[in-house]
Length: 475
Image (cartoon, rainbow, N blue to C red; front, side, top):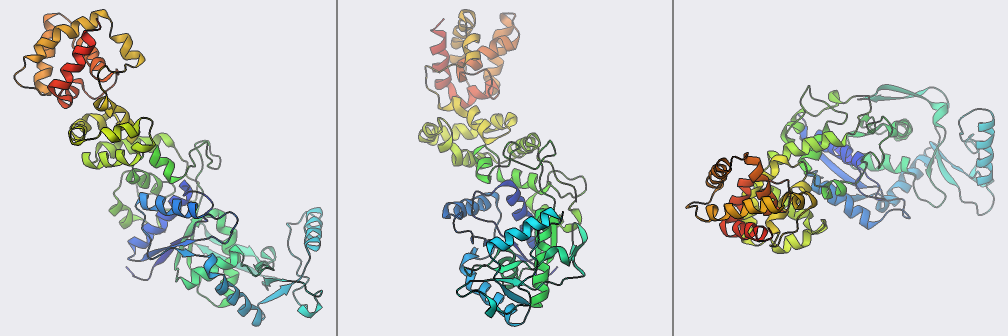
Protein backbone atom coordinates (compact mmCIF):
# COMPACT_ATOMS: atom_id res chain seq x y z
CA UNK A 1 0.00 0.00 0.00
CA UNK A 2 1.25 3.47 -0.81
CA UNK A 3 0.25 6.89 0.47
CA UNK A 4 1.16 8.56 -2.83
CA UNK A 5 -1.98 7.70 -4.80
CA UNK A 6 -3.90 10.83 -5.80
CA UNK A 7 -7.12 10.61 -7.83
CA UNK A 8 -9.48 13.35 -8.85
CA UNK A 9 -13.06 13.97 -9.85
CA UNK A 10 -13.41 16.88 -12.27
CA UNK A 11 -17.04 17.72 -13.13
CA UNK A 12 -18.22 20.66 -15.21
CA UNK A 13 -20.70 22.78 -13.22
CA UNK A 14 -23.32 23.02 -15.94
CA UNK A 15 -25.93 20.83 -14.24
CA UNK A 16 -26.49 18.42 -11.39
CA UNK A 17 -24.32 15.46 -10.40
CA UNK A 18 -25.66 12.98 -12.94
CA UNK A 19 -25.50 9.25 -12.36
CA UNK A 20 -22.50 8.69 -14.65
CA UNK A 21 -20.53 11.39 -12.89
CA UNK A 22 -21.48 9.95 -9.51
CA UNK A 23 -20.06 6.57 -10.58
CA UNK A 24 -16.83 8.21 -11.79
CA UNK A 25 -16.46 10.03 -8.48
CA UNK A 26 -17.16 6.81 -6.56
CA UNK A 27 -14.57 4.80 -8.51
CA UNK A 28 -11.89 7.46 -7.97
CA UNK A 29 -12.73 7.79 -4.29
CA UNK A 30 -12.69 4.04 -3.67
CA UNK A 31 -9.37 3.63 -5.46
CA UNK A 32 -7.79 6.45 -3.45
CA UNK A 33 -9.19 5.18 -0.14
CA UNK A 34 -8.11 1.63 -0.87
CA UNK A 35 -4.53 2.76 -1.46
CA UNK A 36 -4.27 5.14 1.48
CA UNK A 37 -4.38 8.07 -0.89
CA UNK A 38 -6.47 11.17 -1.55
CA UNK A 39 -9.21 12.15 -3.98
CA UNK A 40 -9.23 15.79 -5.05
CA UNK A 41 -12.17 17.70 -6.46
CA UNK A 42 -11.66 20.08 -9.37
CA UNK A 43 -14.52 22.13 -10.77
CA UNK A 44 -13.93 22.54 -14.50
CA UNK A 45 -15.62 25.91 -14.77
CA UNK A 46 -13.80 27.44 -17.72
CA UNK A 47 -17.07 27.57 -19.72
CA UNK A 48 -18.20 30.78 -18.02
CA UNK A 49 -21.50 31.04 -19.88
CA UNK A 50 -22.74 27.61 -18.81
CA UNK A 51 -21.06 27.30 -15.38
CA UNK A 52 -23.23 28.29 -12.43
CA UNK A 53 -22.76 28.41 -8.68
CA UNK A 54 -26.07 26.57 -8.28
CA UNK A 55 -24.60 23.66 -10.25
CA UNK A 56 -21.43 23.70 -8.15
CA UNK A 57 -23.54 23.57 -4.99
CA UNK A 58 -25.64 20.74 -6.42
CA UNK A 59 -22.51 18.71 -7.25
CA UNK A 60 -21.05 19.21 -3.78
CA UNK A 61 -24.37 18.37 -2.17
CA UNK A 62 -24.78 15.25 -4.31
CA UNK A 63 -21.31 13.98 -3.45
CA UNK A 64 -21.83 14.66 0.25
CA UNK A 65 -25.19 12.88 0.25
CA UNK A 66 -23.61 9.85 -1.45
CA UNK A 67 -20.90 9.78 1.21
CA UNK A 68 -18.09 10.52 -1.25
CA UNK A 69 -15.48 12.69 0.42
CA UNK A 70 -12.80 14.78 -1.25
CA UNK A 71 -9.57 16.06 0.20
CA UNK A 72 -9.16 19.80 0.74
CA UNK A 73 -11.16 22.59 -0.89
CA UNK A 74 -12.61 22.20 -4.39
CA UNK A 75 -10.23 23.66 -6.98
CA UNK A 76 -11.56 26.06 -9.61
CA UNK A 77 -10.07 25.46 -13.03
CA UNK A 78 -11.01 28.98 -14.14
CA UNK A 79 -9.00 30.47 -11.26
CA UNK A 80 -5.88 28.78 -12.66
CA UNK A 81 -6.05 30.44 -16.11
CA UNK A 82 -2.80 32.35 -15.55
CA UNK A 83 -0.94 29.10 -14.84
CA UNK A 84 -2.39 27.50 -17.99
CA UNK A 85 -1.19 30.48 -20.03
CA UNK A 86 2.28 30.29 -18.44
CA UNK A 87 2.70 26.62 -19.43
CA UNK A 88 1.49 27.25 -22.99
CA UNK A 89 4.00 30.09 -23.35
CA UNK A 90 6.75 27.84 -21.96
CA UNK A 91 6.03 25.32 -24.74
CA UNK A 92 6.06 28.21 -27.21
CA UNK A 93 9.49 29.34 -25.97
CA UNK A 94 10.85 25.79 -26.33
CA UNK A 95 9.62 25.46 -29.90
CA UNK A 96 7.12 22.77 -28.93
CA UNK A 97 4.15 25.01 -29.72
CA UNK A 98 3.53 27.86 -32.12
CA UNK A 99 1.23 30.77 -32.89
CA UNK A 100 -1.40 30.13 -35.54
CA UNK A 101 -3.25 32.98 -37.25
CA UNK A 102 -5.51 30.93 -39.51
CA UNK A 103 -8.81 32.78 -40.01
CA UNK A 104 -12.24 31.23 -39.34
CA UNK A 105 -12.77 31.22 -43.11
CA UNK A 106 -9.55 29.28 -43.68
CA UNK A 107 -10.49 26.74 -41.01
CA UNK A 108 -13.92 26.26 -42.59
CA UNK A 109 -12.26 25.74 -45.97
CA UNK A 110 -9.94 23.09 -44.46
CA UNK A 111 -12.88 21.22 -42.94
CA UNK A 112 -14.88 21.29 -46.18
CA UNK A 113 -11.91 20.11 -48.24
CA UNK A 114 -11.23 17.23 -45.83
CA UNK A 115 -14.88 16.24 -45.91
CA UNK A 116 -14.92 16.30 -49.72
CA UNK A 117 -11.85 14.06 -49.81
CA UNK A 118 -13.32 11.65 -47.25
CA UNK A 119 -10.78 12.60 -44.57
CA UNK A 120 -11.49 13.55 -40.95
CA UNK A 121 -11.27 17.34 -40.56
CA UNK A 122 -7.79 18.27 -39.35
CA UNK A 123 -5.82 21.50 -39.16
CA UNK A 124 -3.27 21.42 -41.99
CA UNK A 125 -0.34 22.96 -40.09
CA UNK A 126 -0.04 26.02 -42.33
CA UNK A 127 1.42 28.19 -39.52
CA UNK A 128 3.60 25.42 -38.07
CA UNK A 129 6.87 26.83 -39.43
CA UNK A 130 5.90 30.44 -40.14
CA UNK A 131 7.02 33.41 -38.10
CA UNK A 132 4.33 35.33 -36.17
CA UNK A 133 5.63 38.51 -37.84
CA UNK A 134 3.86 37.32 -40.98
CA UNK A 135 0.49 37.71 -39.28
CA UNK A 136 -1.83 40.56 -40.32
CA UNK A 137 -1.47 43.67 -38.11
CA UNK A 138 -3.47 43.35 -34.87
CA UNK A 139 -4.33 39.69 -35.45
CA UNK A 140 -4.64 37.61 -32.30
CA UNK A 141 -3.42 34.08 -32.79
CA UNK A 142 -4.05 30.86 -30.97
CA UNK A 143 -1.24 28.71 -29.58
CA UNK A 144 -1.12 25.21 -31.05
CA UNK A 145 1.00 22.27 -29.94
CA UNK A 146 3.64 21.15 -32.45
CA UNK A 147 2.62 17.50 -32.49
CA UNK A 148 4.72 14.71 -34.03
CA UNK A 149 3.65 14.21 -37.64
CA UNK A 150 4.47 10.53 -37.89
CA UNK A 151 4.62 7.55 -35.58
CA UNK A 152 2.16 6.73 -32.84
CA UNK A 153 1.21 7.97 -29.41
CA UNK A 154 0.59 5.07 -27.04
CA UNK A 155 -1.84 5.06 -24.12
CA UNK A 156 -1.45 2.02 -21.86
CA UNK A 157 -4.91 2.00 -20.41
CA UNK A 158 -5.68 -0.10 -17.32
CA UNK A 159 -9.12 -0.99 -18.65
CA UNK A 160 -8.91 -0.79 -22.44
CA UNK A 161 -5.35 -2.09 -22.80
CA UNK A 162 -2.75 -0.68 -25.17
CA UNK A 163 -4.23 1.98 -27.47
CA UNK A 164 -2.16 3.35 -30.35
CA UNK A 165 -3.09 6.72 -31.86
CA UNK A 166 -1.51 7.61 -35.22
CA UNK A 167 -0.03 11.05 -34.65
CA UNK A 168 -1.30 12.29 -38.01
CA UNK A 169 -4.83 11.90 -36.60
CA UNK A 170 -4.12 13.93 -33.47
CA UNK A 171 -3.01 17.07 -35.37
CA UNK A 172 -1.70 20.36 -33.98
CA UNK A 173 -4.60 21.06 -31.65
CA UNK A 174 -5.10 24.35 -29.82
CA UNK A 175 -3.70 24.88 -26.31
CA UNK A 176 -4.57 28.56 -25.84
CA UNK A 177 -7.37 30.39 -27.62
CA UNK A 178 -6.90 33.85 -29.14
CA UNK A 179 -8.46 35.46 -26.06
CA UNK A 180 -5.83 33.80 -23.86
CA UNK A 181 -8.13 31.18 -22.33
CA UNK A 182 -6.97 27.56 -22.26
CA UNK A 183 -8.69 24.71 -24.04
CA UNK A 184 -10.04 21.83 -21.98
CA UNK A 185 -7.27 19.56 -23.33
CA UNK A 186 -4.49 21.83 -22.08
CA UNK A 187 -6.03 22.91 -18.76
CA UNK A 188 -6.68 19.30 -17.69
CA UNK A 189 -3.04 18.28 -18.18
CA UNK A 190 -1.66 21.29 -16.31
CA UNK A 191 -4.14 20.89 -13.46
CA UNK A 192 -3.61 17.15 -13.08
CA UNK A 193 0.17 17.64 -13.01
CA UNK A 194 0.09 20.52 -10.55
CA UNK A 195 -2.36 18.65 -8.29
CA UNK A 196 -0.08 15.62 -8.23
CA UNK A 197 -2.69 13.32 -9.75
CA UNK A 198 -1.29 9.82 -10.16
CA UNK A 199 -4.38 7.89 -11.32
CA UNK A 200 -7.29 8.97 -13.53
CA UNK A 201 -10.49 6.92 -13.82
CA UNK A 202 -13.03 8.39 -16.23
CA UNK A 203 -15.47 7.49 -19.00
CA UNK A 204 -14.20 5.99 -22.24
CA UNK A 205 -15.60 9.01 -24.10
CA UNK A 206 -12.31 10.62 -22.95
CA UNK A 207 -10.13 7.98 -24.62
CA UNK A 208 -9.25 10.16 -27.64
CA UNK A 209 -8.54 13.01 -25.20
CA UNK A 210 -6.05 10.70 -23.48
CA UNK A 211 -4.06 10.47 -26.71
CA UNK A 212 -3.89 14.24 -27.14
CA UNK A 213 -3.18 14.82 -23.44
CA UNK A 214 -0.33 12.32 -23.62
CA UNK A 215 1.22 14.49 -26.35
CA UNK A 216 1.14 17.47 -23.97
CA UNK A 217 2.67 15.44 -21.13
CA UNK A 218 5.46 14.26 -23.43
CA UNK A 219 6.12 17.79 -24.71
CA UNK A 220 6.46 19.02 -21.13
CA UNK A 221 8.49 16.03 -19.93
CA UNK A 222 5.97 15.31 -17.18
CA UNK A 223 5.00 11.92 -15.78
CA UNK A 224 1.76 10.63 -17.26
CA UNK A 225 -0.84 9.48 -14.70
CA UNK A 226 -2.07 5.90 -14.78
CA UNK A 227 -5.34 5.98 -16.75
CA UNK A 228 -8.38 3.74 -16.78
CA UNK A 229 -11.23 4.54 -19.17
CA UNK A 230 -14.46 2.79 -18.20
CA UNK A 231 -17.32 2.19 -20.66
CA UNK A 232 -20.25 4.56 -20.34
CA UNK A 233 -23.47 3.43 -18.69
CA UNK A 234 -26.22 2.31 -21.07
CA UNK A 235 -29.95 1.94 -20.55
CA UNK A 236 -31.66 -1.47 -20.33
CA UNK A 237 -32.22 -1.34 -24.10
CA UNK A 238 -28.50 -1.00 -24.80
CA UNK A 239 -28.72 2.63 -25.92
CA UNK A 240 -26.63 5.35 -24.31
CA UNK A 241 -28.12 6.24 -20.95
CA UNK A 242 -30.57 9.14 -21.14
CA UNK A 243 -33.16 10.72 -18.87
CA UNK A 244 -35.79 8.25 -20.00
CA UNK A 245 -33.59 5.45 -18.63
CA UNK A 246 -32.90 7.15 -15.32
CA UNK A 247 -29.94 9.40 -16.12
CA UNK A 248 -31.00 11.86 -13.46
CA UNK A 249 -29.08 13.87 -10.90
CA UNK A 250 -28.18 12.44 -7.50
CA UNK A 251 -30.72 14.80 -5.93
CA UNK A 252 -33.49 13.12 -7.95
CA UNK A 253 -32.65 9.70 -6.50
CA UNK A 254 -32.63 11.23 -3.05
CA UNK A 255 -36.07 12.73 -3.69
CA UNK A 256 -37.32 9.38 -5.02
CA UNK A 257 -36.46 7.78 -1.70
CA UNK A 258 -33.23 5.94 -2.42
CA UNK A 259 -30.70 5.49 0.37
CA UNK A 260 -27.18 6.76 -0.41
CA UNK A 261 -25.59 3.46 0.62
CA UNK A 262 -27.90 1.54 -1.72
CA UNK A 263 -27.11 3.86 -4.64
CA UNK A 264 -23.38 3.57 -3.85
CA UNK A 265 -23.63 -0.22 -3.85
CA UNK A 266 -25.59 -0.18 -7.11
CA UNK A 267 -23.21 2.24 -8.85
CA UNK A 268 -20.07 0.33 -7.90
CA UNK A 269 -21.49 -2.75 -9.63
CA UNK A 270 -22.09 -0.83 -12.87
CA UNK A 271 -18.96 -1.81 -14.77
CA UNK A 272 -17.00 -3.35 -11.88
CA UNK A 273 -17.31 -6.73 -10.22
CA UNK A 274 -15.81 -8.65 -7.32
CA UNK A 275 -16.65 -12.25 -8.04
CA UNK A 276 -20.35 -12.84 -7.53
CA UNK A 277 -20.67 -10.34 -4.68
CA UNK A 278 -23.73 -8.13 -5.13
CA UNK A 279 -24.25 -6.55 -1.70
CA UNK A 280 -21.18 -5.05 -0.13
CA UNK A 281 -20.38 -2.57 2.61
CA UNK A 282 -18.41 0.59 1.91
CA UNK A 283 -15.47 -0.95 3.78
CA UNK A 284 -15.56 -3.96 1.44
CA UNK A 285 -15.78 -1.73 -1.63
CA UNK A 286 -12.69 0.18 -0.49
CA UNK A 287 -10.80 -3.04 0.19
CA UNK A 288 -11.80 -4.80 -3.04
CA UNK A 289 -12.02 -2.06 -5.68
CA UNK A 290 -9.32 -2.05 -8.35
CA UNK A 291 -8.70 -1.84 -12.09
CA UNK A 292 -8.73 -5.61 -12.42
CA UNK A 293 -12.48 -5.77 -11.74
CA UNK A 294 -13.38 -3.15 -14.36
CA UNK A 295 -14.94 -4.52 -17.54
CA UNK A 296 -14.79 -3.32 -21.13
CA UNK A 297 -18.48 -3.83 -21.89
CA UNK A 298 -20.96 -1.01 -21.16
CA UNK A 299 -22.96 -1.54 -17.96
CA UNK A 300 -26.74 -1.42 -18.20
CA UNK A 301 -28.71 0.72 -15.79
CA UNK A 302 -31.72 -1.15 -14.41
CA UNK A 303 -34.02 0.87 -12.14
CA UNK A 304 -35.80 -2.33 -10.99
CA UNK A 305 -32.50 -3.75 -9.71
CA UNK A 306 -31.72 -0.50 -7.94
CA UNK A 307 -35.15 -0.56 -6.33
CA UNK A 308 -34.71 -4.15 -5.15
CA UNK A 309 -31.30 -3.33 -3.71
CA UNK A 310 -32.73 -0.27 -1.99
CA UNK A 311 -35.43 -2.46 -0.44
CA UNK A 312 -32.74 -4.73 0.96
CA UNK A 313 -30.94 -1.78 2.55
CA UNK A 314 -34.19 -0.42 3.99
CA UNK A 315 -35.05 -3.79 5.57
CA UNK A 316 -31.64 -3.95 7.23
CA UNK A 317 -31.38 -0.29 8.24
CA UNK A 318 -31.65 1.10 11.75
CA UNK A 319 -35.14 2.45 12.46
CA UNK A 320 -33.93 5.84 13.75
CA UNK A 321 -31.79 6.23 10.64
CA UNK A 322 -34.77 5.58 8.37
CA UNK A 323 -36.81 8.21 10.20
CA UNK A 324 -33.95 10.66 9.61
CA UNK A 325 -34.01 9.86 5.89
CA UNK A 326 -37.78 10.35 5.85
CA UNK A 327 -37.41 13.76 7.47
CA UNK A 328 -34.78 14.70 4.85
CA UNK A 329 -37.29 14.52 2.01
CA UNK A 330 -40.62 15.13 3.80
CA UNK A 331 -40.73 18.85 2.88
CA UNK A 332 -40.63 17.92 -0.82
CA UNK A 333 -43.34 15.23 -0.65
CA UNK A 334 -47.01 16.02 -1.19
CA UNK A 335 -48.53 16.37 2.28
CA UNK A 336 -45.08 15.97 3.79
CA UNK A 337 -44.87 19.41 5.35
CA UNK A 338 -47.98 18.71 7.40
CA UNK A 339 -46.53 15.36 8.52
CA UNK A 340 -43.28 17.08 9.52
CA UNK A 341 -45.23 19.67 11.55
CA UNK A 342 -47.18 16.93 13.32
CA UNK A 343 -44.11 14.87 14.17
CA UNK A 344 -44.12 15.55 17.92
CA UNK A 345 -42.49 13.26 20.46
CA UNK A 346 -45.50 10.93 20.59
CA UNK A 347 -45.75 10.60 16.80
CA UNK A 348 -41.98 10.09 16.57
CA UNK A 349 -42.11 7.15 18.96
CA UNK A 350 -45.09 5.74 17.09
CA UNK A 351 -43.11 6.02 13.87
CA UNK A 352 -40.15 4.16 15.39
CA UNK A 353 -42.52 1.48 16.70
CA UNK A 354 -44.16 1.14 13.26
CA UNK A 355 -40.90 0.99 11.33
CA UNK A 356 -40.32 -2.81 11.55
CA UNK A 357 -43.69 -3.37 9.86
CA UNK A 358 -43.28 -0.46 7.43
CA UNK A 359 -39.84 -1.41 6.13
CA UNK A 360 -40.69 -5.04 5.39
CA UNK A 361 -42.62 -4.11 2.26
CA UNK A 362 -40.96 -0.79 1.37
CA UNK A 363 -38.59 -0.40 -1.56
CA UNK A 364 -38.02 3.34 -1.13
CA UNK A 365 -38.22 5.96 1.59
CA UNK A 366 -41.28 7.29 -0.25
CA UNK A 367 -42.92 3.92 0.43
CA UNK A 368 -42.11 4.39 4.12
CA UNK A 369 -43.66 7.84 4.09
CA UNK A 370 -46.74 6.56 2.30
CA UNK A 371 -47.04 3.62 4.68
CA UNK A 372 -46.62 5.86 7.74
CA UNK A 373 -49.31 8.33 6.66
CA UNK A 374 -51.93 6.52 8.80
CA UNK A 375 -50.06 7.64 11.93
CA UNK A 376 -50.69 11.28 11.07
CA UNK A 377 -54.31 10.89 10.02
CA UNK A 378 -57.14 12.29 12.13
CA UNK A 379 -60.68 10.99 12.47
CA UNK A 380 -62.72 11.00 10.36
CA UNK A 381 -60.14 9.33 8.10
CA UNK A 382 -60.02 9.95 4.37
CA UNK A 383 -60.59 6.53 2.84
CA UNK A 384 -58.97 5.59 -0.44
CA UNK A 385 -61.17 4.02 -3.10
CA UNK A 386 -60.49 0.39 -2.13
CA UNK A 387 -60.90 1.04 1.59
CA UNK A 388 -64.19 2.87 1.00
CA UNK A 389 -65.48 -0.07 -1.05
CA UNK A 390 -64.46 -2.52 1.68
CA UNK A 391 -66.19 -0.64 4.49
CA UNK A 392 -69.80 -1.39 3.66
CA UNK A 393 -72.74 -1.74 6.06
CA UNK A 394 -71.88 -5.34 6.93
CA UNK A 395 -68.19 -4.81 7.68
CA UNK A 396 -68.92 -1.67 9.72
CA UNK A 397 -71.30 -3.77 11.86
CA UNK A 398 -68.48 -6.28 12.41
CA UNK A 399 -66.26 -3.44 13.60
CA UNK A 400 -69.04 -2.24 15.91
CA UNK A 401 -69.22 -5.72 17.48
CA UNK A 402 -65.45 -5.83 17.93
CA UNK A 403 -65.12 -2.48 19.68
CA UNK A 404 -66.41 -3.59 23.13
CA UNK A 405 -64.24 -6.72 22.94
CA UNK A 406 -61.17 -4.61 22.27
CA UNK A 407 -62.17 -2.03 24.88
CA UNK A 408 -62.17 -4.67 27.59
CA UNK A 409 -58.72 -6.08 26.83
CA UNK A 410 -56.59 -5.92 29.98
CA UNK A 411 -53.45 -5.54 27.87
CA UNK A 412 -53.04 -3.69 24.57
CA UNK A 413 -50.39 -5.12 22.27
CA UNK A 414 -50.19 -6.96 18.95
CA UNK A 415 -50.52 -10.40 20.54
CA UNK A 416 -53.54 -9.52 22.68
CA UNK A 417 -55.46 -7.78 19.91
CA UNK A 418 -54.70 -10.60 17.46
CA UNK A 419 -56.03 -13.23 19.86
CA UNK A 420 -59.17 -11.20 20.50
CA UNK A 421 -59.85 -10.71 16.77
CA UNK A 422 -59.13 -14.37 15.99
CA UNK A 423 -61.50 -15.53 18.72
CA UNK A 424 -64.19 -13.17 17.43
CA UNK A 425 -63.73 -14.38 13.82
CA UNK A 426 -64.01 -18.01 14.91
CA UNK A 427 -67.16 -17.26 16.90
CA UNK A 428 -68.70 -15.80 13.76
CA UNK A 429 -67.31 -18.63 11.60
CA UNK A 430 -65.34 -16.14 9.52
CA UNK A 431 -61.83 -16.33 8.14
CA UNK A 432 -59.45 -13.96 9.89
CA UNK A 433 -58.99 -11.85 6.74
CA UNK A 434 -62.73 -11.10 6.59
CA UNK A 435 -62.33 -9.25 9.87
CA UNK A 436 -58.72 -8.05 9.66
CA UNK A 437 -59.10 -6.32 6.28
CA UNK A 438 -62.03 -4.09 7.34
CA UNK A 439 -60.09 -3.31 10.53
CA UNK A 440 -57.10 -2.21 8.46
CA UNK A 441 -59.28 0.00 6.26
CA UNK A 442 -60.95 1.60 9.30
CA UNK A 443 -57.63 2.19 11.08
CA UNK A 444 -55.52 3.44 8.16
CA UNK A 445 -57.93 4.47 5.39
CA UNK A 446 -56.12 2.03 3.09
CA UNK A 447 -56.18 -1.67 2.26
CA UNK A 448 -52.36 -1.93 2.38
CA UNK A 449 -50.44 -1.22 5.57
CA UNK A 450 -48.10 -2.86 8.04
CA UNK A 451 -49.62 -5.91 9.79
CA UNK A 452 -52.95 -4.77 11.21
CA UNK A 453 -52.18 -5.93 14.76
CA UNK A 454 -48.94 -3.95 14.65
CA UNK A 455 -51.04 -0.97 13.54
CA UNK A 456 -53.32 -1.40 16.57
CA UNK A 457 -50.29 -1.63 18.86
CA UNK A 458 -48.58 1.43 17.37
CA UNK A 459 -51.70 3.63 17.38
CA UNK A 460 -52.48 2.65 20.96
CA UNK A 461 -55.80 1.84 22.60
CA UNK A 462 -57.38 5.32 22.58
CA UNK A 463 -56.47 6.30 19.00
CA UNK A 464 -57.41 2.87 17.62
CA UNK A 465 -60.80 2.80 19.32
CA UNK A 466 -61.57 6.36 18.25
CA UNK A 467 -60.93 5.48 14.60
CA UNK A 468 -62.91 2.23 14.77
CA UNK A 469 -65.83 3.94 16.50
CA UNK A 470 -65.87 6.68 13.89
CA UNK A 471 -66.23 4.10 11.08
CA UNK A 472 -68.73 1.92 12.99
CA UNK A 473 -71.04 4.91 13.46
CA UNK A 474 -71.23 5.31 9.70
CA UNK A 475 -72.89 1.86 9.36
